Length: 400
Image 1 (cartoon, rainbow, N blue to C red):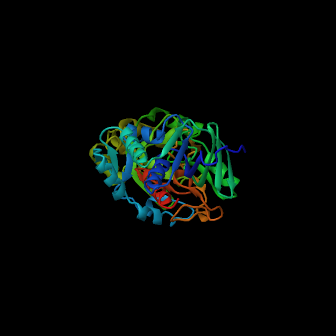
Image 2: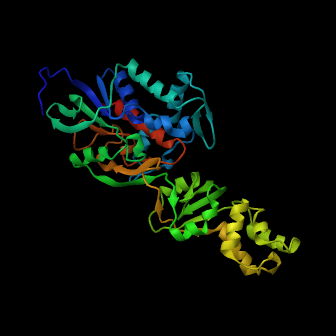
Image 3: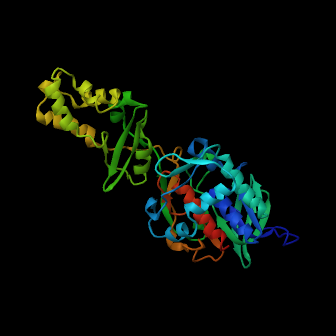
């Protein structure tokens, strides 16, 4: 390590690695408490995941946020932060900047205009607090010393009393994301819950793809289950397998080798409907009959897959039961996910057993904090992961 000629020149109370949602929130809160804060971001632009989220409108929180919307090896870890800075608190900040927003569905709040409004709001909050932001700064090494930490970047060496790691996870690598935060954790002997892609489309093997090849682009409301967990949202067939909100949600719970169960006609008694059609329209083909419950292409595929006589009149009760089950209890085994390339978030991360739930400081290394997606707390789809960023960033910002 090189020694600064003036050791105070590059000294800050707090250095935050990462100018994403959690990092910028932490920086603003710490700066407003009078801390000298430096944010180092390897990208040329801050808040890149904020920018692309929600189709460019940023699903910035959810009205119904609660601990039940998060996965972690320690499900109670998120309680303190979520209670300390709620969705109502962030909404109040958004409103104070005059940013118009709307509820799209199920409590999901989006900007009426652009996600850039959220980024600009956070940058203005940081600016008012005197936060320094350095973009395009790649960190080469981190070391602990008697006064705190030394951070060596390609733009020089910086020193601080508190170091906050807000580098996110490896999801969406085209945004510059990586597993760098895990390397820092491992350097300081912190445990890592094995990370994997979450909120991600599921893929089919070659045999299933051949069976459902004509359905790419077909969407249907569905209830998708894995064990006791289920989600009732839209499902989308793709050229690789399955996507849509219901699939993204269940992907966080799915494991390799698991089946998922899909009800593609929720609230409808398909068997009773088919029996009625058998009596009222006996000359109908099964694909035509199923089109009363499903999109036509999906109805045709299910009719082909289940097979049977030409006319519905010739279907036995048992065969009708099999067809109805193919609609209401479709059991399918994905072969994998699309991975980090399309994953909205990363499941797993820095083990919460090594962190304070109130301050996000590591129990073993005073002054070292981890916040946001890099931590083993992952939200459901619908604005929950942003709320985790705001809440964890706020908690750490109040204590660094």
